[in-house]
Length: 428
Image (cartoon, rainbow, N blue to C red; front, side, top):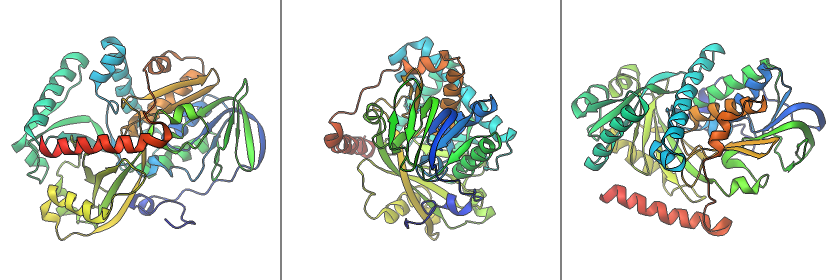
């Protein structure tokens, strides 16, 4: 990425309607009710909800609106969380896990409603499929359908290989769990749409205004290189991009690199033949592949996560091989865009939302499952600031341990663990 590029080069950045640049924070602001770190989905949704309720809100963004994971992710909006419901059952019990799942369904409904209410042109499409490659994965997914129906009253469909083949032009998978309530969108356009709605509601957004210090107290202060904001409440929504602001939060998430390739346009007919119902698809390997179609009929294909701080070697060649393993008929189609970024994962993959102090809120640990749940987190934080904290408090009860090894060893330990999971995907 060039130093002066407003966004990392991607198909998203190339195809989104530009948003005017917002000013840099200069000087001291003392008139805010709430100051939010991060202009991604979480921060923007919280800002919008609070501004519509009459609060004076300031958002501080280190780069540009949607610059991080909110503007680079796979675009797949899925009901639930980064961990399985069985994990939440083990952590909180069945009743609380059911409440959290029902809230996640509400979060998906509110995502759709937010897009409609604010006329956000982000190419929303209905439908998502999880697909197994190996018999053990098929058995697990069939059991998952039964579990979700019996314990959560959540309707999922099992498609056998023939039924899946009616919609997906690939022989790689043994079937699919189809979820009609989930879907996909253009991530950066959605971030821009949230920002436009927030600005229209009176939110002040400052870009290129990295928070370098959080001063805690009855009236928290967020300081940048050129100014500071004092407010009654502070919200930390930096996720994988926090840098020394709240060490106790940073130790409980790990930045993980993930990468997406966009092919050249396939043409409407060829694209429609590839994924006939325009759903999003993800396999269930630990190092998973996920893909969907873009609005200009190109394939958007993600995968090859990196658990170190370096991109994988020969990334373009690796992504081509992964695409062709699913769609060998695309051997003649070049990759036109290739980009990556960080997502934040928690050790148990469960959401990590709550308070650092009565006046300081945070949300992180979306674990690659944040398109819908980030907006949910923003809403629950807004509810709590307005005095209705019961729902956020339930999430705050989820226990979270720091990654082992501290800053020096946690990355190599995680790399070793992920190597084992990749081997298991390949051999078992």
